[in-house]
Image (cartoon, rainbow, N blue to C red; front, top):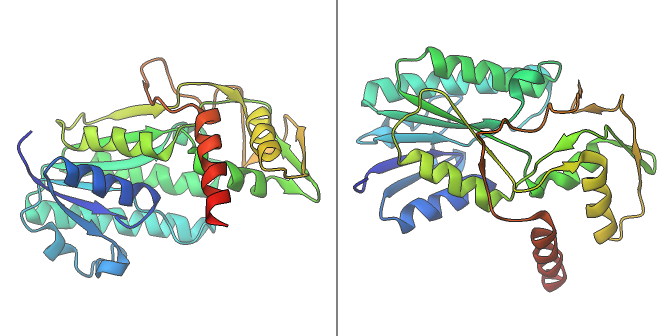
Length: 258
């Protein structure tokens, strides 16, 4: 695809900043849109200007609050404002980053927000691609923290197939410059783990003394998990980075930063 203008909503975040860099390296004109750059998807401020002349808009933004009502309001308001501004500017492809298993996690307020976001995208007039990524390696610690009760971390021993945020950004970049699929593309890491084993491996490598307990009833951000809730189907595109390699690099970076 020849060089085009791409707007990245949430362009200063973990995935957004990597995505902006990758797209610029391929010669595209990229607007890194975030509240820092004067673009606010909740109020609509700066949106029309950012979209002018854009072919593609990629939404990798996230709700600043994870409280149920706030998440729902964020994804609904933000997505409505985005698709309206895109229609006005003649944008031809809306790409949104979401989560593998979203439709199976409706007990969780966060995922109800993502379900609402996806519904608005499907119902809009803009051709779209929704990227469902599995959990990022970078968020393994957050999973442990959310599941901690005293000195114990209670997790359901179900399957998970996490991936590196670099691989997520690669996948989203490829989809952004391709034709809209008007559906969902799943992306995942190269290996499956049991959720409790993954967290145990991470905490152990970081000398974290918390005890990981396999508890089939343990909730995941408010939702009960079944065996395959968090893993993709057979057609998922797989990233290359293995957890063990990422963990080694991450620990080295932490030591260097000290």
